[in-house]
Picture (tube, helix red, strand yellow):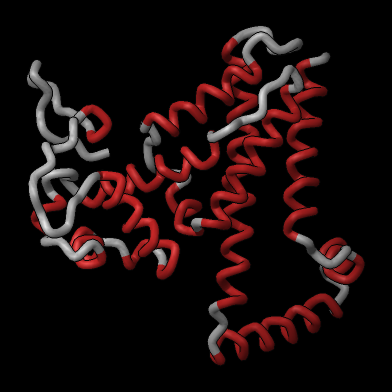
Length: 245
């Protein structure tokens, strides 16, 4: 995360800690929320590559330099966009003592948010998420397991959450990669897919890969929703078995 202007004690202030600049008369009033909503609209329509401070300013009919009163960099804009989506995930979270149901709900909400905002999946890993909504997401996750039967200490809680998060992020990214590949298939891509299918049939016919041949020929046609639920069950069942030993 990019450091911004300094706080009163000289420490660099992150965007979460900086107040918005005072409002002033303008043909196009601005706020961080309006800027972030415009950036999300652009990203939803055309992907992250379409997001820049200049393009957001154009969408808002404002000069690009005005945006620098609210943000120091594009990185800060991306951080704010991600945190806004976390706000969608954490709004009206169900409560209860069933840790499996709570983690399942968070997993499904995260996946649904990534399908609404496909760019969100690209930013789920590799960036620190420390905005207020992201921290609320982490807080809800930890609180779900902390004190639950079988979770002896905070290390057990964090390791279990790490396993669930690794699965959810990986499954979402795989989901969307496949979806994008089919949606954006160009003639050259289709030709390559046809050639690949023919190659795989020839290779499997050699008999050198019997387990792979069985998987390819006898599997149930993939269904993304069912596959996600089943994989999530494997993870949650494994955690439940481990903590009840």
